[in-house]
Image (cartoon, rainbow, N blue to C red):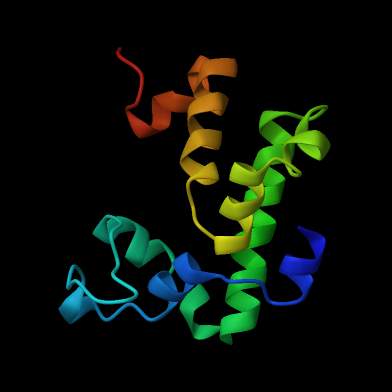
Length: 118
């Protein structure tokens, strides 16, 4: 995992986020963008970074989210193939999972997003 991360790995999902063309959002090609438009707007400032820096920021956010979700098990989980491949691809699946865990641990955290019923 560490070798893949520092050696560049294969950040295929980050490539889809980084090379997003808003006029061709959901076109089926090698790096198809399959996330909601709101995520495209949130990542717009990050896409101004060089690609390697963008990948580093996404991977760092994923690792931080993993540590917050499982503070004692993160160091074991990162060696599991599904988690390692998630971080290697620089996908964002750990980030929404982190939001769900946060709202379950502290229900008032979801109030601002409207995720919890009134």
